[in-house]
Amino acid sequence: MGYLLLLEDREMDDKDFKRVLEDGEKLLAYFESDLTRDGRFGCSYLLVTDKRAVVCDADLKVEVSVNLRDIRSVSVKDYIGNAELMVTLKDESVVILTRFSRALRKRFGDASRLLENLAFLRRVRREQVYEEEEVAAKTGTLRSILRFVLPYKWVLAAGMVAGVCGIFLGLLPPYFMKMLIDDVILGHKEELLAQVILAIIATQATSSLLGVVRSYSLSYVSLKAMYSIRIHLFKHIMRFQPSILDRYEAGRLISRITDDVGRVNWFLSWGLEQLLRSSISLISVSAMILLLEPRLSLIALIPMPILGLGVFLFRRKAR
Image (cartoon, rainbow, N blue to C red):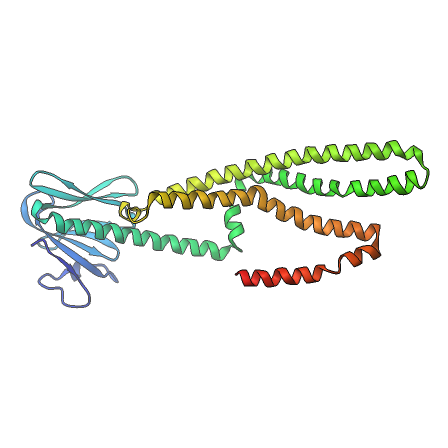
């Protein structure tokens, strides 16, 4: 009594457990106890399938059936002379599966670990399916990160608009300097001097104010998103079984989490902004120099195709 059998496609030994199984269900192992669920001496069985944990009496009458996907944790509680195997479900309820004497403590310790690992594997498999479905519906990693930013989309939009306006304002001082040299100094239009100077001062002041709005908005969004990501990761890790976490060093796990979240924070607060600013700056500066001096701008833009080809080749090599 009290032995464990891992079953393949061979005979079911002395007991015909097939009538306990559901359609398409496969029996992985069974444990025989020397106590009934109410603590009396007798025979009972714990069947572990690929879907459920089932407890039967000596006549194979089902007393308890628990779906593996509903199990949150598994534990063994010791008493004087006997012990019981119990599971905690996702709704925080506790179900006692079976009782056994202390002589079978090691065997049912194996049963506890088996149930724990099977429940974890089913949960991981289900989460992987959900993640694959989510990834298939998205266009890439950027969108999966930005879902944490959606609650703060208006603050992010304000920061982006301030950044774009700051880029365009940064293009005006060269134009004002052109007016100052061509019209005021060389053209002897002294009446425009005050207007040009005031325009330069107003442009710089407005650009600085927009820079403050941009920096504050993006920093606010990145910190809020980082907080949401950390909460999401913490809840995800708390669903792991203790035996799974025992395989990894706590310092290594925490280091990975903080480092990865820090990189996401850097991307949202600086990388995303620089990507947008660089793209808009390249287009707007190219348009501005084409308007001011078309022939000189064409000469300056000659290296651009070569640079683009170099970036493309480097990106392929890096991947």
